[in-house]
Image 1 (tube, rainbow, N blue to C red):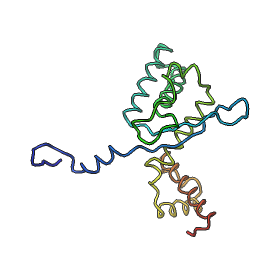
Image 2: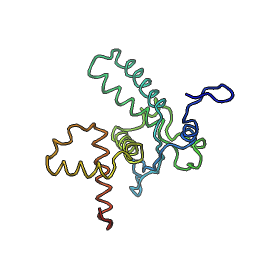
Image 3: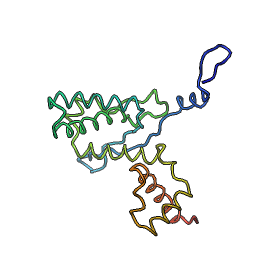
Image 4: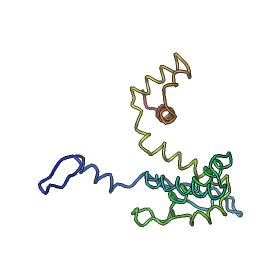
Length: 196
């Protein structure tokens, strides 16, 4: 912390923090998984935006409250399933927006109605598809995407060639996902004629 002339305490990285607060979080456009009965094409597109920690916490709290109310106890196997399904709907409710407006984050309108209505409408396969798209957004455009350097990629590829899959044991799940994405990107570059 530093003190400015007006004795107000501010973060040393104040300029970066202001930039972070005004920069939109990563988004992607996703086909809605339900098909038009006539031509079997997607019924439309939606925008997904990565959630903040505060939004993720709100999802967890709402899911816990719903699961506890539905099951009446949190120490049984059914609680975990109800919690997971409810948390996924809470995430989708907060992360999905109408694809018609994307210019300003403030102008984005929620795509889904409140979760109690959403719970009665979405099928489990639609939910899983959309959650998969959200997780893909996290790994493809989130901070994890930038965590593997060229040197890291070379080291882990060499380790895989010499020691096999056991060499990945020290990596976390997120680390393995980042490595897989970096490898996929490198393969795509090689197919496009770029050299190592």
